[in-house]
Every structure is written in structure tokens, then in C-alpha cells.
Length: 265
Ligand SMILES: [Mg+2]
Image 1 (cartoon, helix red, strand yellow):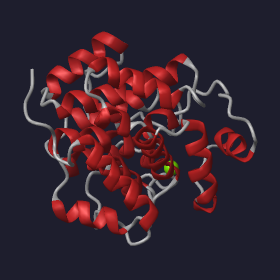
Image 2: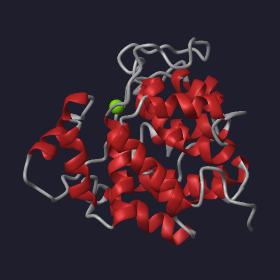
Image 3: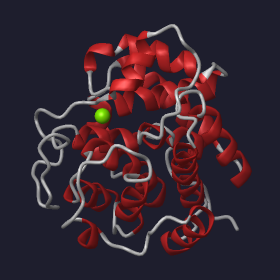
């Protein structure tokens, strides 16, 4: 979950000014900040840990950090309204916030069920559910020490995404895209072809597009594959206010620690 949050923070300064290279320094830009991706991820964790209705948790956290900005237009309208019903979205917000589902799940079926539960309250379009499921499942598998190659095969078989690519293949033609179907496959490629957590985030920034969200999705998966180096984890935490850090810590307590679980079949 912190992997997704760090991806969001690192990507925050590149969403409107794409960098399109893996070579950027420092890793945390002085003006980097957490955006809607982080606020929504915290809300999803709060909902799953504390048994809250996901729509209510999203509204509470979204309104508390409203001024942070970065909200999609339709999501912002939903946040501001009294509605607790979904609005048919297939935006990439479905996948950027779903990491806690992959971390808390004890089985494939539970990963899918938790992903759907927190997604359907706003993003009830089939492409959004698919993107959220695929992201949560990749995290679940990675935590169980399934190899990146096998995760790729499982996701391709189940969801039909084109993952037979590299960041170098994607970079020349990729453009801003805030749909699930135009973000999740690319973000998964960035994580599944990476050599480390940091390399996954650099892949994500390098392809351009909706950088904070691409990096958030890739970062959630990469954390489960590689775990986050301690100095980066510390810097990521330092960007968050205390109420968010509390939810983050509670999530890891519920999920059985920040590091991937022991190997399992
Ligand atoms: Mg954002």
C-alpha cells in the first residue's frame, strides 16, 4: 500500500509535465505531494479494516482532503453530492486505490471479492472492475511469491490484457489516458518487468501518461514483488499526515506486516 502511495507522490509532479525517461533526480522531487490516489487508497484501507461502507469512507476522506486536488471531474461531483450510488465509471481510479484489497486477501477469490467490493461503489463499469481485480490479484500473487512471469501469464489468461510489452515498447506512443483499460496494462508491465521497487516506479514515470496513477498502480504491485527499500519507505511516510499514517500502519498490522508473506504454493 505504501508502494502505491510512494508511486503517487513521485508521479505527482509529472502528471501534467511528463518526464518520459527513467533518469530523474531526486527520486522524491522537492514539490512532490500525495494526490487523490493516496487519499482514495487510504479510504479503501479504512473501509476494509474497519468494516466501513466503502462509499462512505471515500466521501469522508475525499472531503477531508478535498483541497489536495487531482480529482477526476466526475469523481469530484460524486464526492460533493449526497449520492452513495455508483456512476458507471471506467476511470483508472478504480485500480489506483485498490492495493489494500490485494494485501488483505487470503485467497484468489477473496482478492477478487474485496477488489469488487471497494470498486463497485463508484466504478461499476466492467472495465473498471476488471482493472481493479487484475491489480489486486497481481498484488496478492506477488505477496505469495508467485514470479512476475507467472503473474503476467495468470493476468493475461484471466483478463486478456496485452502484457507482452516492455516500458521501452510503450513509451514512444503512450499518451495521457485516464481509463482503466488504458492504464492498468501499462502499469502492470512497468511493475512486472522491473528489477526492483525503484525500477518499477522509474518505468512508470518513463512511459508518461497519467504519471501519478500509473506509478501508484505499478508501485502497489512492485512493493509486493520486491518490498520497498527502508530509506524510500521512510521518505514516503514522511509525506503523509498523521491520520493517514495511522491507517497505513493499521493496514499492515491487519495484513501481517509490510514484507511479503512466506513462500506458498
Ligand atoms: Mg492523482
